[in-house]
Each structure stands twice: as C-alpha cells, then as structure tokens.
Length: 457
Image 1 (cartoon, one colour):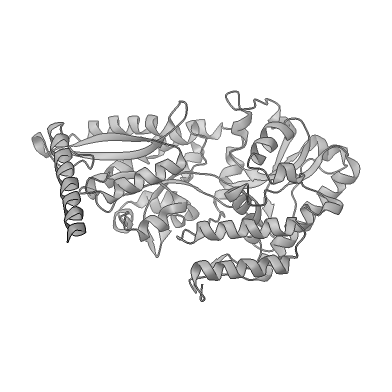
Image 2: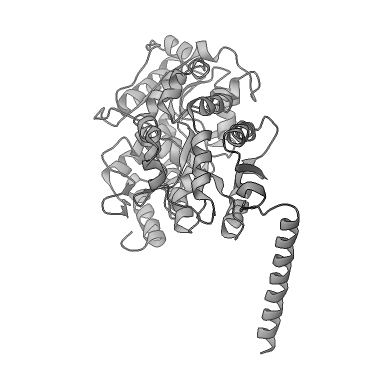
C-alpha cells in the first residue's frame, strides 16, 4: 500500500503539472496542437520539422513561404511553425514524444524510412481519402514516391524530396586505363572488370569503393549491399508472403561481390583503415575523389554538395572530371538498372484535431512552384514530375540524370525490424571482408533474422 500511495502521489503531481502547463499555454494563446480558438472560428495548424546546424534552414524557409500563402488565401487558418532543434537521433526522440501527447502537432516532417514504425505506433493518420480527391498527387508524384510512404496498403505521407544512388567514376583515370570515358556498365562483371583493369594499368589509385562493414552503418547497407541485392531476382522482404528473405542465392551473390572487392590478395577497394572507419565517406568524398585517387565510387546523388563552393571540400572541376553511370542489375536483366531512394515526407498526425485543414496546407506546400523552390535550395531530387520543367530545377547540375532514376527506384522495407536487420547485413559484409565464406556469413545472418523476427520471419 505504501508503494502504491507513493505512485499515486507521483501521478497526481504529474497530472497537476500537466494541467498547469495546459493553462499556461491557453493563457499564451493556444496549445502546440493548434486547436480552435479566437474570432471567426480561426484554427491553428502546427507544423513540426527538424532544424539543426548552421543556416540556411531550408524547411523553415519553405514553410515561411507556405505560411504566407495559406494565411492570405485561407483567413480562418493560422500556421504555427515549430522547429525542433536537434540532430537526427534527437529529432526522432523529441518528435515521438510530441506525437504521443494530447497536444501533438498537426503536420510533421517524417523520415520515409520510419513511416512503417510510426504507423505501427499509432502516430500517423492515413491520407488515402484526401489523396483520392487531389488528382495532382496521382498524376504528378512518381509511382515510387507514392509507394515509399505506403504501409499495409495505406498512404501516410507526401514526399517533398528524395535522393538516388549511382556510380561515380573518374574519367581521367578511365582514360589512362584505356577505358571509355562515357562508361555505362551493363552488369556486375563489367564493374569488376573495369576495377581490375585500373588496378593493373593505373598504379597508385584505389580502383573502386563499395561501402561495407559495421562502422559505416546504413551507408554499408543501402549504398553497398542493397544496391547489389536489389539487382538480383531475390528481395530482402517479400511483400506477398509478408516475410523477410533471410537466405537466397541473390543474398549470397551480393556477399560474393563484396568478397571480390575486398579480397586481400587482389584488393580492389580501400584498405581496412579507410573502409572499416566511421569517417570512410568523408575520406572518400573530401580526400580521395578530389585528389584523383579513386576511380569508381558507388554512392549517392548528394555527394556533389561536398564539392560546391559552400561545401566541405570545394572542387570546381568535379563536373569535368567525373562521369555518372547507372548501377546495372546482376546480369543486365530487366529492368537493367537499379537504384534506391530515401528522403523525407510530411504527414498528418493521428491526434490532429484539424486533419481537413492540415491537408489543405499540405496541398499548398506541395504545389509545383513552392516545391520546386524548396527542392532546388535544399539540393533535393524532386518527387514531383512537373518540377523537372521548372527552369531553376532544370539548371541544377545533373538534375535530369538524377530525376530519371526516380522512375525505377526502390526503397528499404519500412518495418520496425529493419534497423536491426540492417546491422546484421553489415555484419555479414564485414564477415566476408575478413575472409569468411559467403555461405557462412549468410548462415549467421539467417540465424540473426530468426532471432529478430521469429522462426517464421
């Protein structure tokens, strides 16, 4: 009884503090959730997004423009901007706490990778009925960008920017090796053959980089392993059977590719001091590539931001020095090429009291011109087809090449188990780097997936 009394007293104290906080918020003119109040039935829509590091803050700028348009065209709606000052991990934590509360924001910036987890937690509202009444969405958003925010058959967000993965290659090194400077590999063997040719003919450079191993975390999984696996006939997750594919020929073949890149007797990739280091991407992008010390890099569309005048390593010559190729499927089988995308969406929370008005705000925010302005300034690949024709977007270096990849892009399975399974993939990659067979590494992965997802996975 004594412990129970203490618990009840503590809960009463918390309830009192919460009530006091609500009264203070009301006295200050409203709650974070933006409930109705004021003259003419005006309502407030609260928008939460991440803000971190030095300016410019692209989401804040974008929502500032949206706020002006919404409040001018909808006098009954007031936009309350709620930047969450935190790094990525801190943002997720703070946003989760907000979405659990009774004063949840109406609209939130949602990592597409976490949509499934947040739906499972009950945080997000389905948008199917709203989207069905907005023809622009079905017509203009790439099919892949509609699927990436879909979970269990329902859509929970509108993508406002994305990325893709591809192969960067140094044309000067290729020329020295006698390889074509307009290179486009048609299968995995073409990539390995080019790397071996460079190793033989151009000493002093690293033939290729494929992110691999535990230290590089999701870069190893997504830029490395999944760019290979998704080019085989075997998936990581079977959406028909709703099961993880923990053992397959494609998985083994992908590990064998990694093993060939990091074979110490004929090393094609970076040495372990570079590859198995959390700073591998910085070393690759800021040192080796600008210095002409790396021939091939399987990486992302965001990399040129490093070399911009305002980037970490300005490199004005990158457009003349580097070529870009699509990642081929394993044998060149249809669809011939593969890429993966991530990115961010904006969603409506399940606890929003003004979902209709919140969706009206999202429609304005994602109108062609406002979205084009955001995607250009934030260096995003647009998820919206007609943005490609906006002059400012068209003038961004390589925007046409990157955007064409969105039409066939794929994405990570957005399920709560994925982060743990991703780590297990990195462990399998590192295992073959260290000399273990692909069969043994896959066996360990299968056991780990069983432990994570259950015997039936």
